Amino acid sequence: MSFNKNIDVGEKLSGLFVIRNIELKSKDAQFYLKMEISNSSGRIYATYWDEDSQKISKELRRGVVVKILGRGIDVKGSRWLQIDAIRLANKDEVSVKELLPKGHYSCETLWERFSNYIDEIENPNLKNLLKRIFDDDKEFLEKFINYPAAKLWHGAYVGGLIEHTLRVAKICSVVSSFYPNCRKDLLLTGALIHDIGKVDEITTDGFFDYGVNGRLLGHITLGVIKLKETANEIKDFDEELLTELLHLVISHHGEAEKGSPIPPKTLEAIILHHADMLDAQAEGIEHIIERDLPIRGEFSNYIRILERFIYLDGYRKNSK
Ligand SMILES: [Fe+2]
Ligand SMILES: [Fe+2]
Image 1 (cartoon, rainbow, N blue to C red):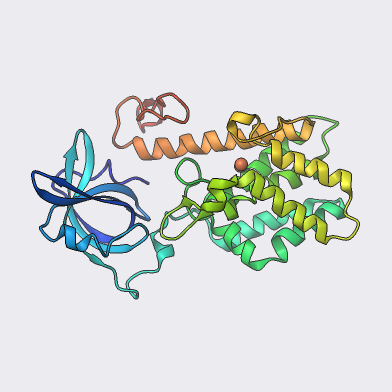
Image 2: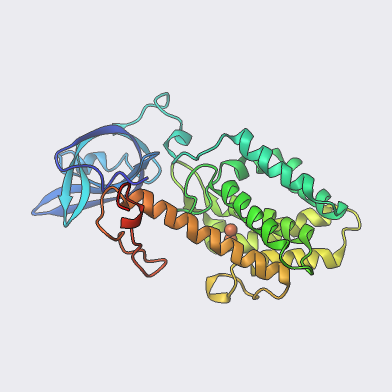
């Protein structure tokens, strides 16, 4: 996904980008712009040294779409873009959505797979709740199908959230059959709703970021609010069932340091937590392999979130 490491020194690059960050800086009495820009191909740092950089900085800011012509340069071992020409994009040149990293499947395919899981639920209370959350609110559903699972780490592309949710549901569905006491309907419902708060947590205006709600409340709290509000709209919704569902959402990150105020205290909550973590880490490593395989040696770049390097050589074609 990241082209910033792939671009060669001197290689020309042109296209539409959204500005993620921008700073006006100066060196040796000359103003220049330092930016982080992105489009559906990835992110890259860029500099612009032209004498109009101070003037042009007034119309450029975070979230603005620009047309850029530049070339690859080396900055302390990383590839950056030296911008030769930059201008604001015209409104008819691009839709902001086209600048987001693309997913693997169509909306229709994703929704069909998702609604198959809802159809599997037998408990009428739970089925009704899921239909209200996903079927009745078309604006929410549109976002749920198009949102990423995270800003940068795993599933950071259009459709990443629903793809992640589908894999968590699949893992839970398989694992539930190993344990006779597992209440499959409850677990599957928890899997399908565990990250619904991300729709209110993440913004998608040209690039993925955390909005004010996301930064101040987080997706677990936002998911709890959405779940409670929806259940309250259903007449005589089973209170005990709601408490267990809320527990599934609240505990799915496993521990307080990872964002869950309560650790998992039911069999279903334990399974959901591990299914969620398994998919987040496995999908994250898939992304690292795809990103670093063409450009790194035996090991990936250091992955801060995992505190380790990932071994790449085993994934090279013809290496075994
Ligand atoms: Fe989560
Ligand atoms: Fe998740």
